[in-house]
Structure formats: C-alpha cells, structure tokens
Length: 308
Ligand SMILES: [Zn+2]
Image (cartoon, rainbow, N blue to C red; front, side):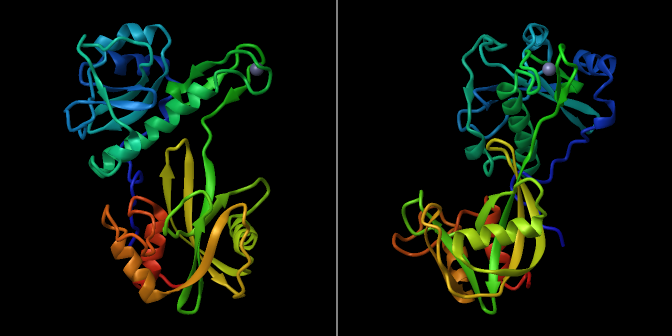
C-alpha cells in the first residue's frame, strides 16, 4: 500500500491544461466562491490565535493587490471551488485588522494533511517567483504567465517554469543492519538516512551510489524506490530509496558527516519510538521526526515493511 507523508496527498485538481486560458482564470477570480490564501514572507495568514487554521479568504478584498501585479498562483480546483495563493508582501491586510502569519514547517503537522500539501504547493511556487523575476537567458524583467505556473520574457520570449530540485534520500542496508549518519552541522545524537541532490546526467540509482560512496565510503549494489515527498524549503522532491550495501568498512566524508555507523534493526526500532516524542531522552540516538521521509524509510525497514 502506498504511504502518504507530510506535504504529499494534495487533493486539488491542478487543471494544468487550462492554465493558459486567461479568460477562464479571470472568471474564477470573479466567482464569490473562490478562495485565496495570502502569504507574507512566505508564511500564510492564519485565522485563530493558536495558528492552526489557514485563513482562506474571498478574492474581492484583494482585487487591488492582484491588479497591481502581486504574484498570484492558481493552486487548483477542489469540490467545485478554485483556490489561489497570493504573495501579499507590502499589501495592507484586507480587513484592516492585524493579521497573524505562521511558519509552514510549524503548520505542517498542525493542520490536516491535505491542507499541508496545498501549503507546500503554494509556498514553493511563491518562493520561486520571488527569486526569479528576471529572465535567465537575457536578464530582462519577466512577467508571470499560465495562472502562476510560468514566467515569460517580453524581450527574448523565453518561457521559464518553477523548478523542482530532486534529492535522493536512502537507507543503505546490509543484512540485519542499516547505515545512518550524523550531520556535521547538527549537534546532538540525531542520525538519519544519507541524502544528496541529484546532478545532471545522472539516474536515480547512480545518484544513490555516488552519494553513499562519497559520504560513507560504502559501495551500493541494488537500489529500490519506496516513496517520495515534496519538501517546500524551498522546492525539493525527496525521493526515498532502499539501497543494498555491498561493502562494510565506513570512511566518512568529514565535510558532510560527523559520524556514520551501522545500526541493528532493534536499535532502529527504539530510535523510531523515541523520535515520535518532542522531548527525547538526552544522549540516546534518535531519528528525524515522523514529518521527515528519512524517519519513515528507517521505520519501514526496521519494522519489516520493506526489504531490499
Ligand atoms: Zn529573455
């Protein structure tokens, strides 16, 4: 059975085939049922003081901001209603009262899963527009197009599309043990799967073998895909894999890792349990929290859900 992790499972129909239809998008904005989520500094506006309800609003109060060229992204259609995200930086609050915003990472597990997935879609798209205002080909200021899913250069006519950066994250397994590493930049006792950005001209399997070898000195044979997770900081696709280790001697890359070692299955089971609490016992090895796909890969192997 396919497992769905935080930021995955977006319920909206993205209707990408109609994004070019400006008249249709205009009609969605005129529809009083349409909802819009304003963002400030890439943080969505939230409704309640406990900050666990996204403040989806009607379009009308934001019309002037939209007309002034603020970044607007059509997220999709759900249950007959259109949803947009708006970059509201510099725009006064629509209702005139002070707004609260919340960090996407903190909201991720506090709001329903489908909404967290929509939030990931919105945050990554708005962030891309905020950092890609100029044509990568000729340097001219570009204009938003395709319902927020592209930018077009008025000078050289190049089209640019929001990018996704693929990352391989893998649990290398040898018999009844798996390989976990502790990041050099993180103090404490948290161990995780090895991971790294894919490079051009590389298959997923090749990226897994390269990253594991570079970071730990371990050679990898077979590679098996398990699951993926969008990670909107800023726009990564985490591709989770199991890897068959075919060597044992670890030689870490000290630029990346403080330590890497083999863990027994029972040990990883205990780490899974420990990392479900916010307050693990100091000194004992933990994993990243369940929010992270690295936790899920280790859990799946430790409890026998997957084998390489
Ligand atoms: Zn250009």
